[in-house]
Image 1: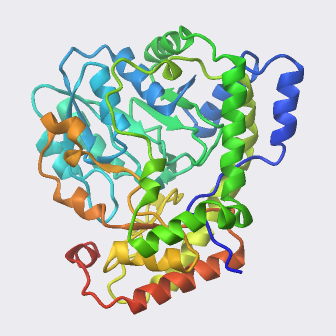
Image 2: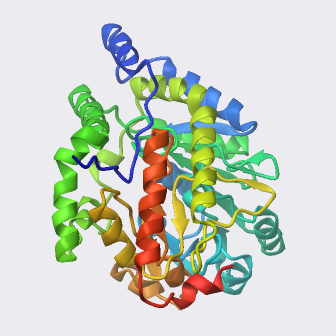
Length: 424
């Protein structure tokens, strides 16, 4: 019987059950000492700044924006290729979003496009270390310094990534991280702000700490849901549950996975679930996960290197380009291929679930119609396909993924897209 391989893997520390049981026994699921310990530990891991926990990574970003006390209507520049929630949270904070195009080879903010997007109303920029690859921070910081702009690093995909030996998140005035179930560090939701200026950090903390605590029943439901996600991604379970739907949909050339994505919508007013405090049990899970983070990231890098070797010799295939001065953590392994949708169908029919676009081309999202602009490189980058290389994959799984992708690519008959040739 064909065993299917999920596109995602969930990172969980080995002693998860004991951590939850310990916090529950002490009556410290929501409130407790691990929150401060985790904030201190993350700050120490990164090497600078004050870390402040939040209910979501997006709320950490929101608190940072509010703490800067920017004038209403001030402009903030965001990459055209990013998760739609980030520009929407900036709008909820009262700012005008301006999109700048990306480099199609790295998927990250293009410093030249960034500079062209700046006006006399620009106050901040958000370089996103997309898919776990650090931005060209030297060039971005030069632009920011010339125009006296705040730099807020989006590190939702990139905890553990480094630029010239230094952790991402420590270059700008502030940064934010996400601990959603599929992220590099998973605490079943939550996020963290990292702020370099002590006074700004205190304002962020005041905002985050003013929120009410999450009800214990909702917290337990969140933990159960996160564990179910992991359960259903196990090969044997995924093969019998979600995969048959994907397989039949591939035959019909349908896309049922779009219903798993968060619906694009206005977030003003903020949903009630957002305005809660980060909890003690999540922080305890984060502390345990932080001790394993480097191992997880290195295992993922090893799998990415193996995929590079397997696909690197194929014509018209562009594997991820990693500049020599950065450490990529491969939250997503993105490849340009001749025909993305055809490859996805062929792979699924052979038991390998792959993804098309993990984020959004925001200049084509109706919610941001007032900010639409030309972003041809973001649209080109959206044609990449994301292949599984997560650290939970076994050696046999990795060999099979590579073999299936190679076979699918070699069987494609259509000419390669221009995007596949232009990013090398």
